[in-house]
Structures are given as C-alpha cells and as structure tokens.
Length: 640
Image 1: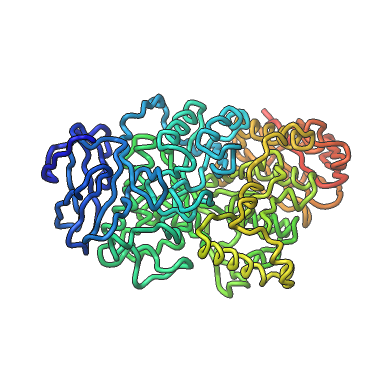
Image 2: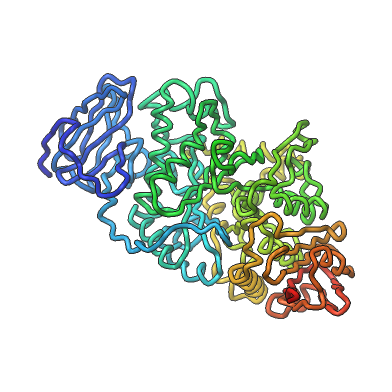
C-alpha cells in the first residue's frame, strides 16, 4: 500500500505537460493525483481509494465542484466517490473502468505514452474518404489492436480517415456504442487506454486521420451515474426520443456544457484524435447564445494547432451547421442521407418510413448530388411540412454521403447491406457514383468487398432490460408490411443474443473469393483515381455538372471550368440503353472525341463474366451502350 497524505485543493501547483490542462476527473501530477468532481447539491463528497480503509474527504468549491490532492496516489490506483455517505460511485470523468461501468475507476496518466506523430498536422478535408468501423466487429478479436493490425490494408485501399463508432464504455460485453455511459473511458473490452493511443499514433504514421463518434445527446440505460452527482445534467423543459434532453440552456447548464467540452478536448489532447462525429445533433436542444455546437467547435479550434474535423449527424438539412460564425456554427461537415435514401428507393425498393419522401428518380438523385442534399426547403409529404434549407453556399466537401452506414444497415430488421439486396452489377455501378461525386464519401466497413456479413443491432444488457430491448425491437418492425405476421417478427435476430453480434463480425477471408476480390479491386481503382486526379478533388460549386439522362441514368462531369482534364462518369442502374453524351459535354465545352476510357464496371478485373452485361463506348460518336447495369469513367482532355 502506498503512503497517502492530503493537501489543500489549491496546492501543489501542477506544471502543465501540454497546452490543454484538464480540470475534471483524476489528474496525476508530480506528487500524486488531484481529484475533482462536480456535485452541486451534495453536502459532502469523499474518495474511496482501493486498499485504504478510510474515505478521503474532498473540499467544496463555490462552483459546486469538490477537489482533493492525494499525495502518493499514482497511475493505476483504483478509486470511487461517496456522495453524502452513498456509494461508492465511479467517476463521471473516469479515464478507465477496468472492471466495467459499475466498478471502481482507475487513475490514468496520459503523459506517459510516447507519441511519435509530432509531424502530423491533422485531417485534410480535400479529397477525404471516410471509413466508418465498429471496433468490436471489425477484426476477429474486436479490439483496438485488431483495428491497428489492418492499417496497412486501409492505407492501400485509399481511405484518408477512419471514423470509429463510439468507444465510450458501456454496460455488457458488446454494444454498438450508443449506450455509452462513461464518456471519458474507452471500453475496457476493446483494450486499455494506451491501446487506443497506439491505434491513433499508428494511423497517423500511415497518413490516416482518426475521428471519433461521440454521443452527447443521451446516455445509455445502464450504468449512467451522472444524475447521482447532479440533477442538472438533464433538462426539465426539453425532451428527446431518449427522454429529457441534456441540459444545455437551463439552470447550471454552464457546468454541463463545460463537462461535454472537456470530454471533447480530452479526446483531442489525450488521444490525438483528429476530430469528432457528433451523434444526433438535432437532439442537442439549446436556445442560448452561442449555441453549444458553435461554442464547442470554437473551443476545439483554438485548443489545437492541428487541423480538426467536426462533423454532425443531423436530419434537419440545416446549412447553418456548416456555415462560418456568426451566421452558422462552424462545423466542418454534416451527414447528408438524402443521397442514400434516393439510391435505396431507386434500386432496393425501400418506400416505408422516411423513404416515403424520396422518389428514387434519377432526376432527383442528380439534384441531390448537384445541391448536396435534396430537401432544401421544399415540402416533404410524410412530414407535412417544408424540410431543410438552401445548401448552395456550402462547399461540396462538407456533405458526407454514403451507400451504407451503421444506421442504414443496422436499423434494418436483418442488418442487410445494400449488396445483399441488389445485383453485383448494380452495386458496382452505384459504388462508382459514390466515389466520384464531389461530396465526401463515407464507406462502412466491409462495403469495399461487398461483405456477406450483415451488421445487426446488438446489445448485452442485463436480463430485464434486455427483454425490453428485444420486445421493443420487434414491436418497431411490426408496423412494416413484411412483419404483420407475429412469426415474421420472431425471425428478427434477437439483439441480446451473442450470435447476433457474432454474425456481424467481418469475415476477412472473403477477400480471397473471386467476386469479393473483384469488387475490392474496383474500390481500389476508383479511390486511386480520386486520390490522384485534381478534377475529382475539386470542391468548387461550379466545377461539377450533373444531369439525369433518363429515369435510371446519371451523368456526372467533374473538373468543369478548370484547366484540368474533365472526368465524365456515366452511371446506369436498370436494364440496357444507348446514351449520347455529346450534348451535355458540349455544354461545358469539352469534346468527347478527346476522351480516354479509364474503366468500366464490366472490365475483367472488376466483374465476373456472368455478373454483368457489356459496356461499349464509341468515343468517335460520343455514345455509350449498356447491356445491363453498370458505370464507366472517361478522362476528357482539354483543348489547348
């Protein structure tokens, strides 16, 4: 047992080891550890140090925080708090919960990690390609080290940024991460804190940025102790689908905002992450000025010399999210799901729920690509109101578009991927579209080889809560036509079953199969083009021309109005057809006769003979004939 002495909360003075100095949790220093927690309604708060018989009293400050310096307490020590004699409770700002969310917290010294990424300057939004992954199902062992082991693969694939689904510790052995309760502590099932640091450091050595998905709009239902420490974490006048909103504008909201901001800064400084994806920002209800999102983004910007990316998931299509202050909140990007919804309506027949507001017509998909999102203030029939704002002042790179993401796959009854529901030829055609549009493309893990594994919704809650989750999941789908029969709902994978999580784990050996290997080859070829060609990185509004040639064919021209060669992408997803591309090319003053074929999705490296029809380009005549679904990419040289 180490010796323990106490001193006042103001001493000793801790010399900062980095530009940002945390103020919450257990912070090691040269003489021991300083503990600080916000508990504004408590009369007394004390620390239970594992191995010590008596709790250590903490001193109350005017702002409702309690602090104490414990000399001789160092990294690895276990501790918890007692509040007015109740407890022990884990630290709300715990850096590690080695025994799970209900156990004692552990002191962590982030300064002991030896970083080697000093030359790294952060995420580059130009030409960015985001790869979303779930740590627990990405690799066979489901750990941070398992992700690190695939960095060579991801680098060769050609992505620029890894987006980790939430890693904040959660109850149970597996979870999507959106039930996190210890916002500062990486899941102990994924590894130790330094394992996450190793992953980020190694990613930077591979030239790959890492952004982290964080959830500030709600907490998970098991192991959430914030309300034990303060009744002010949750709003009494704003509601969300998960219950009371996080308190961003009510009494004591300054401390709640500070807690969330400190969490964001901690990921940036203690783990060197290159930015955050903020979950469901439409549920961050704030009527104050400045809005929490604007304040958070501003503080992240001023705290780091590296380039950071802050991306919102927000269903409202609000341009102000990514407009510069004071008109906007200053975020770098927003998920734009309208692209996905039109695609699925067009090729997979989705028409229920929010898909009812999307036609799937090529003209509407073309408008979505041209604008960044489809709903720009126009009327949405299902919502019975106007939706969205005008996006035309926003750079293309700020819109993140996808064919798949964790929500759009996992929230389906059986976790079906798009490639499970359309032909290989259609899948390759739409993959070509995704990787050549001016918006920022997002891939969901395994998409690049058309993975056979689903990605299901899974949890591991205690039995009573677990039954409620299972029943709720089945009731949710009972409203859809395909699940009117109770027997059909019983076939939906049980979120609580270990098999539901296990079947969602990627099978890397699939890449050796011919069909999967050819899809992977197409993704690599397209990503190489996107990475190497200036026209495919140009985010200016006037550099892209998009036109629907019929109801299932879209033409995209990149590099318009520049001195670079122009790239012509023609994507066709149903039946055959003959298309004359000379007319749209003349509109931007390029001559199709100067075109050079870069690839088609029917080429031997990308498709098996029995999977697709031929694609024939007569460049002298400026025509393209599709014998089935497919896509082609042309480079058109500029005239001198």
